[in-house]
Length: 174
Image 1 (cartoon, one colour):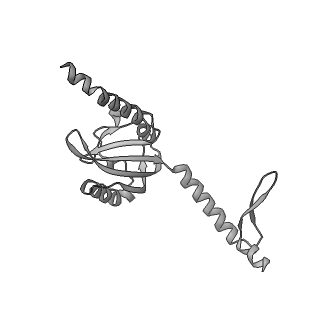
Image 2 (spheres, rainbow, N blue to C red):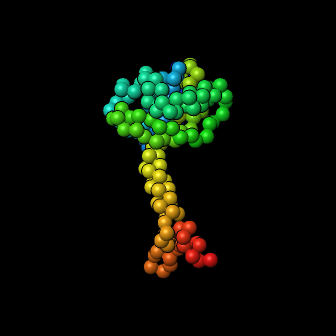
Image 3 (cartoon, rainbow, N blue to C red):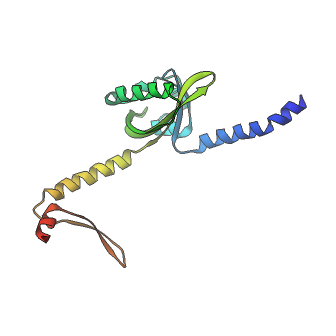
């Protein structure tokens, strides 16, 4: 009836807004039913190096999770389905369809999806951040074991800030 269609207007607008938001967000959003991809947004396709959603939908999540993370990821997935809360960020490694290994962080929550109990995950690639952390750690180890005095400073036109001092510089300063 016309009344029903008129009443559904705001719901259709909200649904359209939801679909646009999910499509535009750069983070990966996916829904898993029975541990298989049931929904994936363009951000997740990009993160996985997939060419289309047909390449991903129906695939087991565990096909992409690095074996070192299988036990942790499976337990988190199981808990997410059985508890009604949002799970905080956790880090995993995923193998993309393009063959690249990626460090990701993910948050997940239970969800009803097409009448099924599902898990929704929002994830992002943190590979560059992890690489920067590893580089910083290597430099820190080198400077900490150096006999030379090494200072890390950040300078601008008006100020200089001492960021880090190696152990040798600390010993010399005493």
